[in-house]
Amino acid sequence: MKRDTKGGKIYPVKLPRVNENGCYEMRLESIGGLGANLCGKLLGELGAIYLGLNAAAFSGYGSEKRGSPVKSYVRYCDPDREILHNSPVEHPHLLVLFHRALARSYPVTAGVDENCTVVVNTDASPEETREELRLFAGTVCCINAQEIALQSKSRLNMVMLGAAARATDFIPLEAVKALVTDTLGKKYPAMLENNLAGVEQGYQSLRSQSFAPDGSYEEVPYRRVRSQWGYANAPLGGANPLFGSTVTNDLSPSREGYIPLFLPAKCIHCGLCDSTCPDLVFQFTPGEWRGKSAMLNRGLDYLHCKGCLRCVDVCPTGALVTGKEREHPDPKWFVRNLDLIAKVTDPDPMGADGAVTGESYLDEKRVDGGLM
Image (cartoon, rainbow, N blue to C red):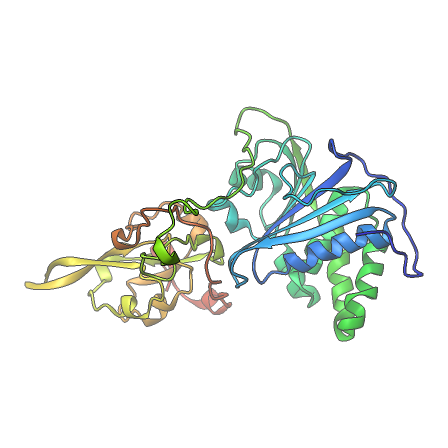
């Protein structure tokens, strides 16, 4: 992406640090639907057009559906250099995490060292976030982007754009506002004021704390994701012998923070949860119920649960209630579906987006750590 002023103002900056290729590099980690792809493109355009730099920006994603992992990569370098490589960013100077749940099953902090700044969409403190991410070292910047987006009636990616710009320590707010005005302002003029408000609040609302390597956690090396199936061992004809549309997927990163909690004492083994579940989560095995042979509900396979909570809505006895996933990191009723354990590939963190939980739960009764 070459520098092009388009007749507008340039905000010249000096890159604070670069790698061996002379580049300042960013990596955005998200799930489909949160706007990380657009945010990465805007950061690339920001560097090339408004900051007087050469820049490159591209994204990586799989099935292009809501909830599946998305990565966006951005590189800046001085205008007298060229960016001659387009490989993924392995050791970012800035890591932006749009969806904190990705860290539970996906190595989002791979390649991060003590010189990296990590921006996380979370309501937790930097110290709590470091513990949650098990971060080796670096500067952690926290921002409740979802709340700010709702208050400003903007979009989450606009808030994260402002936060990312502030975290770099060299991108001025005025340049980001000019970018949003010239690009999104022309396409969505009715949203311009709200988007600018989201950007500014994101820029001004970061909470940060630096952590030196102290032995608490190990540095996570970056590894390219490679399928265990290739040309030498793929099934004949390219057929997938594994049944189930999400058999090799780990859907947990797409959950919105809530999971169904199982209260076995209240379960009547009616099977309504199993019939409404789209992902074969509930595990029924032969047994005896009230003196008769029956299929008994043994628990849930949370690896395939995307948190849609349909089972909670349909359960007639309250044996399934809504709970916060962070409060139940190791549910005792987590039972793997042995029929859907892939034998050739490991589960990938991909899947459809879970339903966004509304505020109706706030006036409901808490039962056994969950919400009734």
